Image 1 (spheres, one colour):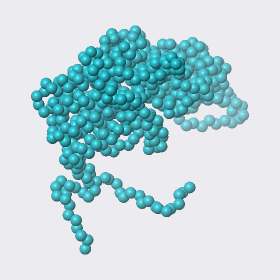
Image 2: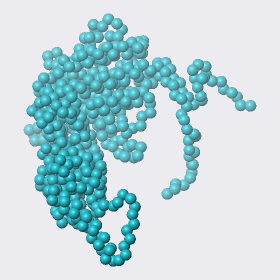
Image 3: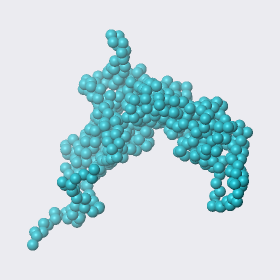
Image 4: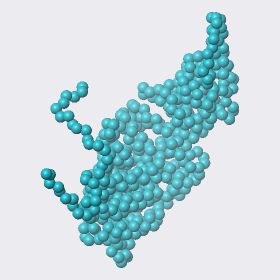
Amino acid sequence: MALRVPKAPGFASMMKEGSKYMHGLEEAVYRNIGACKELCETTTSSFGPNGLNKMVINHIEKLFVTNDAASILREIDVVHPAAKILMLASDMQEKEIGDGTNYVILFGSKLLENAESLLRMGLSPSEVIDGYNLALKKTLELLPTFEIKVNLTKENLRDNEKVVSKVLQTAIGSKLFGYHEFLGELVTKACLTVTGSDSSSSFNVDNVRICKILGGGLLQSTMIPGMALKREVESEITKVNQARIAVFSCPIDIQVTETKGTVLLKSADELLAFSKDEEASIEIQIKALSDAGINVIVSGGKVGEMALHFLNKYKIMAVRLQSKFDLRRVAKTIDAVVLPKLRTPTHEEMGACDSIFVDEIGETHVIIFKHAKSHIATLILRGSTDQILDDCERAVDDAVNNFKALTRDPVLLPGGGATEIELASKLTEYARTCPGIEQYAIQRFAETFEYIPKILAENSGVKSTEILAKLYVGHHDNPNLGFVVGQMQSEATQSNDITYETGDVKLNELYDLYVTKKWAVLFATKAACTVLSVDEIICAKPAGGPKQKENKGWDNDD
């Protein structure tokens, strides 16, 4: 008879075999903190303008080479529940602002790391959480007081194009340092084109389109007001100026009846007459479009050969789009109404465009809808590899999201770690005024802010202790002192040398957005407090049958 092993007493005895139960500081809290620290170590080296890239191969073997934390975390499959909480906070930051995801991971992990030392000193998790919440409240009060006054409002963004460009350059510089000035100006132009004269209306990120074309270099990228589509036209006409456009979601072809029918033909003459009638009907429709002044047709369906013949005859350009979303965007660009049936549109349903033409960029044919009054702008990005283009797209996406945040709240803070050092100083003073045991947690919360300029310095290859010492000394006189990564032309080599030093970020025009910083600190603190408030981990037995047996020694199918 087999020996029966009794179950351990307690909560675990009530659960099925295969279940897991962990409790207490050592088993639950410290393990959770350890998992978050491991996650942080992955993304720490990717932070800042000199952050290193990660090579990620996802579950379908697609390759990503990027230092964008949001993309890295999206593609790696993390299963640890505590690390997932931190990832969810980062995901919320991506959805709320569209930038600052790595900041959330770093700040949240460092808060937990500092909390671990407090817990080992004897403080309870609830006391640490209370201290962190007090520090968060004070931080959110202090942040607006560090504002850099540049006279920027929602209404005068167009008049302050240079300041807007500098804000977007900060976002792009964290991923593509060296190209940030060129791309920043390009994205600013595109965003202001989309915004139009009415700055008070809401800005839609989807209105700034990206068209990636392999070949050339990033400095050959351009911006066009309108749409660019990687397609060729169906007709012989390849260029139309002052275009009058009809947009159809149906095919441009001989119309078929909705119900099935049988045509009985008794002679060859009847067959000829029938085909002539079909030809005549399609010609009448296209002639009617030509008479209405239409010289471009955009279709969401196929363009039949007979219809194409008559389109060429009446000098009408035909463009076929396979995506219904592209069809809607083109209609929005040219101010047209998408018609479900082939008919002559009214004057209000027609679209207008300054010029439509086919251009060859590299080896790619592109149809360009160029319209000065367009509500959509397209950035044509060039690059030598798909990975560079994808990374460039992510940098542009962050910059566009920063512009949207500017339209919501145009308050600017000093960048380069200047805000963090000032917050660390103020919160340290605040901690001394608190009589309770929470002051230790507030002190550690203040110390966490030091990590941001410290990591920026370490990733740039500079001694972080020296930089922090200079920043703390300099902040007694100048609260805008930060860690500045710049470019300076060398007289000896006549090339741009990269410089790392502490400097006035206001003079260097290095700005951070208040809303980005506010939500990043809020999400990171809440995530850290959630992880700290967990004292037990209960994992039920995984569902599903037994795993498939490995057939060792078998030959491969191929």
